[in-house]
Amino acid sequence: MHERTAPITPSAWIEAPRPTGSGAVDQSVALWSALAELGLRHAVLAPGSRSAPLVYALAAAEVGERIRAHVRIDERAAAFTALGLSRHDPARPAAVVTTSGTATAHLHAAVMEAHHSRIPLLVLTADRPAELREVGANQTTRQAGMFRSLARLAVDLPAPTAAGATALELRTAVSTAARALAAATGEHPGPVHLNLSFRDPLVPRPGTPTAPPTQTAAEPASPSRQRIVLTRRVGSPPPPPHPVPVDGRTVVVAGDGAGPAAAELAAQHGLPLLAEPSSGARHGETLIPGYPALLREVMAGPGHPLRPQRAIVLGRPTLSRPVVGALLGAEDVEVIVVDRQLDWPDVARRASLVVPSAVGQEQEPVPAQERRAHLTAWRVAAGTAAAVLPSSWQQQAALAVWESSGAGDVLVLGSSSLVRDLEQHAGPTAARVIANRGLAGIDGTTAMAGGIALAREAAAEAGRVRLLVGDLTALHDLTGLLIGPEEQRPVLDMIVVDDGGGRIFSGLEHAAAPPDLLRRFFTTPHGADIAAAAAALGAEAHRVTAELLPEALAMPAEGLRVLVVQPMPSNDSRNS
Image (cartoon, rainbow, N blue to C red; front, side, top):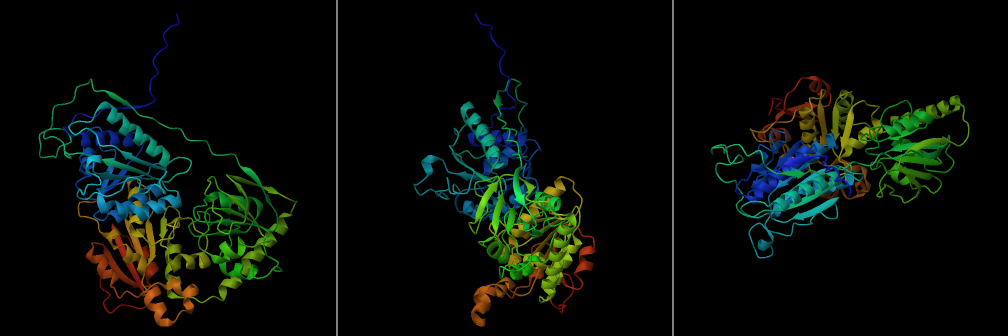
């Protein structure tokens, strides 16, 4: 006979929750316990009744204080706050929790951004059990699978037994949590959606450890409680670099999220680096500030001496038509994309090669002096092209914010004309620059920046977080400033450049529209007092001019501060 082998010891486990008298709360305790053990540290919740089991479960002893809860009244703000928390450290994504019904619809914009930006995000929506669906029950809609086309994983978890979750139901919840976190942070990171059905009772039985504080706590649980296996998935190692050709007519394009690899590749071979503000690569000796205006000239005809023959693309180029259209769309330019995913960026559909990681391979020996002279020609030409562009007080304000942000700081940029001002005029930076360029929307920008600030505070990181937005972006996310008095307020400077409408449309083809049509339907003047609105929502608010903005930015500040930059001093310069 064969000898019996030793039992396999699971790599990890959690204790089954103490019975609470509610299967919904039991399951929620197991879910949070698993997520906490796997590294989740933040959950953003919006108020609601059907999601109550998830609220009570956060107070359970099994969860402890490992997950920090944040409450937001508006579900969209809650979702983008969670997105910001996840952006700060994608290895530890945050969760957003809502009740059932229309509340779930307000998460859609953040889920879309998470999908396109490849940011992990756990979406937990409470729902009615199967017997209450499609029968006209209150606050019940078809929310299972509503994010399926965007989610890395979408699960409609059945409701547990009403009086107490069974062992199988608890194992299913824990296993699903592990799969969800693995899918969100895996090789193709992004959002996951767990639709959680709950039956009444939605609250724990009085006297249990998860009951409201006014109740009497139960006796400690027996040491014989069962254990639930917790699955941990080990990710794949990064791919080895693939050689890509480089020569004297090659440029490196660093789009949003390209990271330092783009700057390193350009520096290693002395290649011109065309880096967007949120690329994470806008630094180094080969950076070409002011490249958008120059590219218009370079790509206008085939005979320009600086015209590239090859472009190596990292990240997602989104800002400049001269880059996306003229350069990457040119028939005589070879395009090589460096991206690990199957949804690699290639708007012009001209990429001849896609590699998961790249190392440059010189096609012919080029003297270092010749490569340096080529870079100098790029810089001089770019400076000349930028010098003739019109300047504005809005550009002055944007550059003041850019230049005040240094190593250890985070600068969050809204999707407006300001980020294009920086692309054209800003120099290198040591700050971390973040923007919602997945869909280039203005939804939730303030809340997302607040989430980043909260994550940095939790990690005790030094430096300041600044948010630079236009007036329409600020107004579109006013609820991002609505944070209750019992909630932790982010330490955040929000700089709003208020020029009375959407200036970006004046730089697009719509500028040729009749003035009345352009003004009403595109620039959309708002007539709002943004400083007063911010103050009414509890923020410290000031009105400043672009000239005085550097001084205001240098002043110490605590909590949430809003600086509204206007073209001339207001009649009332007092704090709002």
